[in-house]
Length: 402
Image (tube, rainbow, N blue to C red; front, side, top):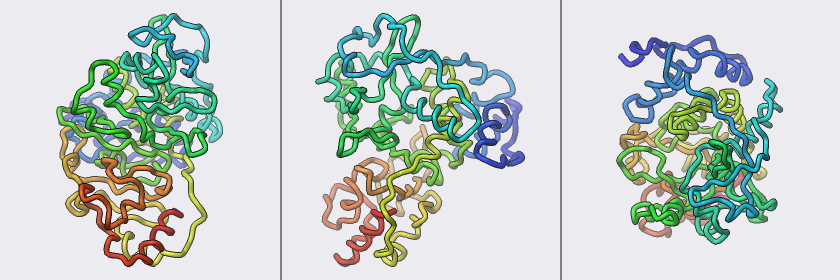
């Protein structure tokens, strides 16, 4: 009934694009293509995440397509800018910075350049809650924002907004982190970011949010409290589904819709990003290259016997599953925001470079995941605990090489 009422598509497949570049062109130019891609990606049309998008996205008339395009001048916020913003996270415009995103051409190189720019610089949302964070280095460190070798602070930008510079988030605020050498790694989960501390700095915190812990956020936008691990997005093309609850079947088109609609909702449904920039951002993430040590054969036999029912050595995964099969916390699976009754199975590509694992970030790396002596409060995923010590070590060597 919803589909009929807005008059676009019924989820029937259109002529398939012949390349990722063609997907981008169709995404930008063809509203019916976007609509069909949305409908084919949705797992549960009744949760609030899906229902909102089915109501507003790629309609024949009205809806989010008619929103004004938002592409402001931006400047990266550095440690030199600390203390320059007022109590609302604003300051007089400096007049600097690029006025628009880089010009896009339909080539791999251009899409990667524009996508990287957007990942680091496109303002997801101007947010007054960031005001105390940019007041001092002590506050920024308390919240867990990274600082790279150039002095850039946590992926924050000063975006031109109503004639002033206003502090805003970017993708890199949550989905980038420094490595052991101090170099910034884009796509890596920022497991030090603590949203509870951020809220508390602004006198808007609560014991509930403080209890989430670093590296976890609740993005479900519903009445329930469901913090999840900030995802490492470097292996996103290997995932069968998007979101921990497998809300969307994954594809490049579905990811582009996910990016565009995330930015629209973050902008309070008042404006939308340039569509070519949204696609370039998705394309950039689709082509991330996670760290992959030299593949080894040692332990493959243990992996095939212990893990291959769900996780495949080529990075692919089995279909989403009922959490009861794994024994992990199941409170998120039917949450009204994004619930599908299932959890996605994460790809293991690059797993050795992830600090936290499972949807709630309750496990400190793959070594703890496979350790039968891990803390008893960590629920579920006891696969491999029955292995002999030598078998477990061989399995770890193989998994670390994926």
